[in-house]
Image 1 (cartoon, rainbow, N blue to C red):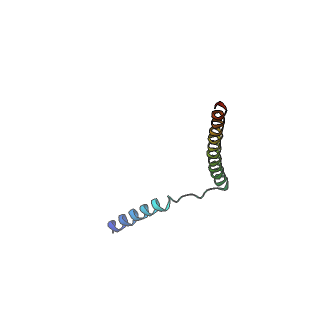
Image 2: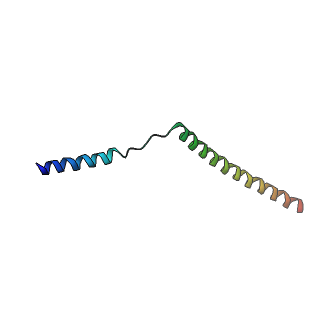
Image 3: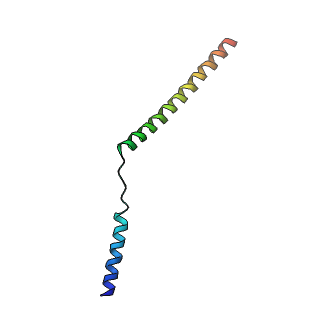
Length: 67
């Protein structure tokens, strides 16, 4: 009887460990914040790329003027 009680207790504890570790759902505020962070990162990359393109055009124009 003791062995079955210990076994059932062990199984109950193990099941509680796995059930208790469920991932929590994101709140709307967390979802908005995540979306904003991604958007800001994308915009920053686009601005950097555009800045590089503008710098290249300026350098090309300077070379043409020198010639």
